[in-house]
Image (cartoon, rainbow, N blue to C red):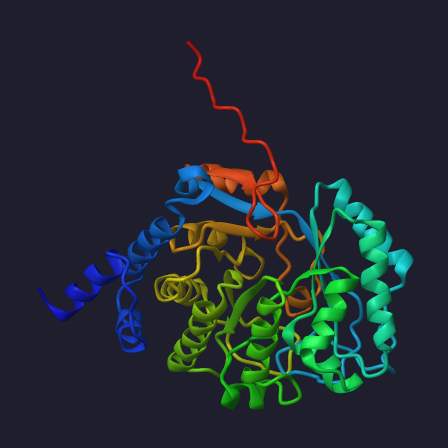
Length: 370
């Protein structure tokens, strides 16, 4: 057997691979990577949901609510942010927040993803009041909110320790923290893309602190801009190390940079590169049970194909999404659409919550006519 054959067998058997081995796998054919990633998905989900994890593909019904688009950072890859003086700058009112959450619940939603710009002037009490208002008014809704970059920004702005800030938000109603703002967790890249944001170490400090305080988080990667393949692998290595420490990440999600309407005008990475990177991520992140497909940036068809390249989850139906939409990605999906995409591949669609617990009833089995 060749060295590559040995590596294929190592992946097939479920063993951990090194960054050097991952670099070698990156050069394999897309078909080979897909087969190996699907095998790793099978191993990761074998015991889930009473042993039925390999025939189930999950999704969540939630809504992205951006509480403000005012941001003092101005990242090169962002088309969403506005300055305070811009005519379309806003801070959401609690009445508008209530309306959005009521609509989400009416559509069967169980969660809101609450994120916003790095506002330079909102009081800390405003954030606490917002969380308390949501939790008291809608106790059934999980608040999945505040990326590590937002936490670091507020920690700096109000001179409060990260652990104290997360504890304060948790007491007010915060249920989990999204992995947004990771981009590429290599400071050489971050200093060029978003020099005012959290460093890689600070991003991990927030995640480590949240995990130790009992809050689960997700991990993400936005790629296909100025990073190298080795930068992506360093990102994955640090995420894997954190998961080894705390087991606090519920899922990994990667997506490609969307260049429209941004200051970083680069040719977009295509579906081939997306599937290759997601497959490699599933193989490398052997301590993650869940990998989420990014149909929001790739479109429903590629999002469906991603279920054969390591993903076991289609993410959210995205009742509302504003950030990547501003950068040109305007795909939409209903629950019916998700069920069709999942069933067409022979899987069973099931709605989940943030912790990957099933919240729906399984569909009755199809009976063939006699």
